[in-house]
Structure formats: structure tokens, C-alpha cells
Amino acid sequence: MKPLAKPSAAGGWRAVPVALALLLLSGLLVRAEAAAVVARVDLSSQRMTVSVNGVPRYSWLVSTARRGYVTPTGVYRPQRLYREYYSRKYYNSPMPYSIFYSGGFAIHGSYAVNQLGGPASHGCIRLHPANAATLYSLVQSYGPGNTTIVITR
Image (cartoon, rainbow, N blue to C red; front, side, top):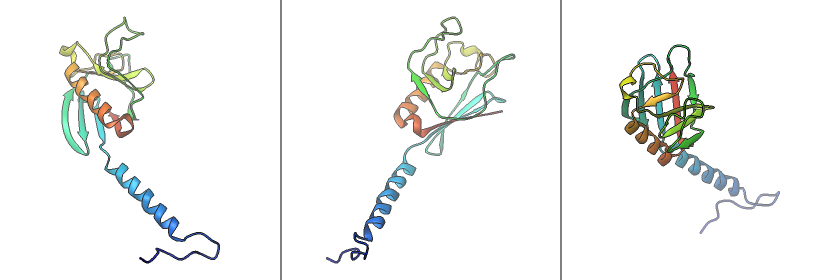
């Protein structure tokens, strides 16, 4: 069997950098092929679409900030996840399946399902509890590092 390369004058094998590059490249390819969850929230339509590996899977009504409050726009990654959470700021309100993405802002389930589709929150993104559970499960399965939250007007 023929070696990949002969030792260089400086010592060592010239093939080592090539082999390392191949190993790194294969690791990057695996990472690029890793599943990705993208949750897009359109504040103007009060709707969230969720794609997995680039394929749209879900479209749900949401409720975002009402007048006097703000839901920040931008691109985020989940920071903290809580299966059960209660607001410390707003009357100990239940926030099931919370996915915090920026400070105190979260995507979470809400039992005020009749308000979905219109602005009603203090800034969080509210979902039907069943939809929040589905999103939470996706983020847990694929990992926060493979999840992107995009919020636009």
C-alpha cells in the first residue's frame, strides 16, 4: 500500500493537513446536514410558520404584543426552555412550553386561545398550548443550536 505522501524536509507528513482538512470537512458536512428548525413569526399577520430542514410543516395563529407593548423583531436562538413556567412579572400567569429567546421574551402556550390571531400579549408570542408543545418538542429534539426564531413585521 502506497503512503499518501512522503515525509517533508521539515519533518512530519504533508498528508496530515490534508487528512485533517478531510476530517474537518466531513464534520462540517455532518453539521450542515443536521436538522434545522426555523420558526418564523409575522407580526402583521399574527401567524407563525415552522419549517424543519427547509420543509414547511406548521402554520399557526399567534398573539403578540398589544398596544403599549412590543414584541421585538429580529433573528434569535432559544436561550432557555421550560416545560412549565409561571410569569414572575404578570400575576403568576401560566406559560406552558416556554422557549425564551431574548431576555424575558418567550414563545409559549396560552389558555386564552380566543385571542390568538390578534395582538393581546405583553410582548411574548402566545400559541395554542398544543402547538406550543409541538414547537417545544421540536426544539428539544433538534436542539436550541439548530433552531432559529425569525420575527418580522
